[in-house]
Image (cartoon, rainbow, N blue to C red; front, side, top):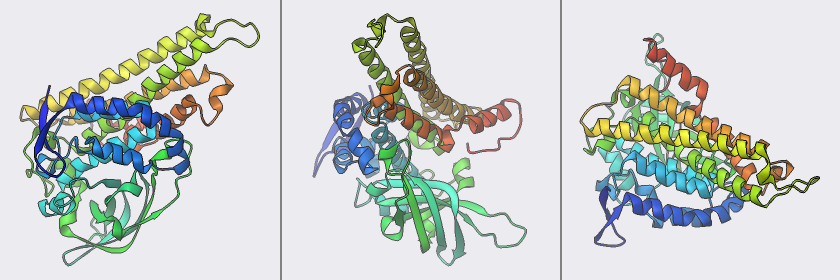
Length: 403
């Protein structure tokens, strides 16, 4: 089992293993389950949940060791997100993304990395990376304006990374898509998060009005894809040779696996106690109940195998000193999206077989149904986009999407 040296409190060092982090999350899952309704009511994570994650060291899984992180591999992040998702889908989603964003910071200039983590190793970064903003090049950096949607966990963040298009210098040039990093003091959160799923993630709008972003706190999408961002090479662990899209494809799948497993547990426990209203027969004796359970179990198992295989494959590749190939990257994108789709289909199956009682807001299957459909709406989880991208590359065509 991989062991990583990590900072401990005010001084000294302690050793923590991947298995210990997964077990800490597993121990937290019942607490997260009890808080799930509170998270939905707040429409963000309870502060206590964020503090529990911080104290357990869960945000530091893929954070650089230089800044107090663990530099663990992708399977650890997925396993931790899965166990958190078994307790609360919104909590698992925010944990996975906020932890993954600590990896994202390594793509920025080293001075920007120091600015984020140098005096605050527990800093959290929320994002909304679609290039919806507009930026103008000015001396020393860029002037940024815009509105961005779906910034999960932004209420708890210290920094926000957003995407924007830089106006070209000539009429014939194309806009340049870039990522910009801003302290929360430079942004405004607009509470728009009234939704049917992942209600507890607080994925609100971010508004930026004429803010200067220094050059050290930005990089281009092109450089991110090519592995030539300003931060490339500042951290030598194999983990930092991954691409962000490959990593994100697995990170968003982790909590979906947890929701699926939790729904299986809920369905089995519930059916053991139910009887048919008119006949009085035990529901466990009904063949449709048994078949739906078997089908859903296979779908969730298949999703787990896909994600586990891909995490192992990507880490084996970069540990061997190789870059991820185009074929690998589009496969990870497809497999991550398909794994979420498999979990969604499984929960749809269980939800439809559970009758009217599962419709109530407080029912765990209702929450699982809404959360997984919300996850499926994420661009990385869009099955059609990921499938087209995979198919084009498999057939020898140029990719036409985010890889």
